[in-house]
Length: 123
Image (cartoon, rainbow, N blue to C red):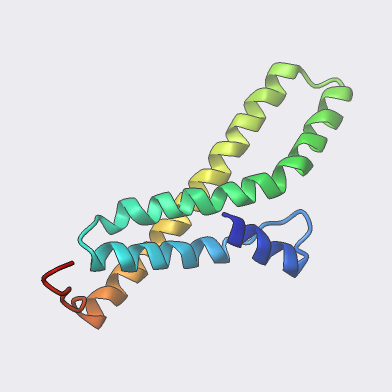
């Protein structure tokens, strides 16, 4: 998450968040999970959600500002809360899907590269 935010901050993306780093994180997670015997799908979804939290943190101030202006213009408070929950689910769900896509590619790459080098007997 910190790397995703740092990379995104340097690009100056404004109020939009790119899922490119989430995809890369899922790819790495899927590659390593397949290589070391873990479930690549679970690992890449988790990587996607963690990377998506960065997007959520990045976009949350703009969403809060929009919600505040909506509530001042006569929109109900409960409706704003429901919209915020839906927005959160969409952002984190999209991040999970992007991570899973990257994990599928990473898992495939791991199969193409082959099995990991054997570890020494004492370790």
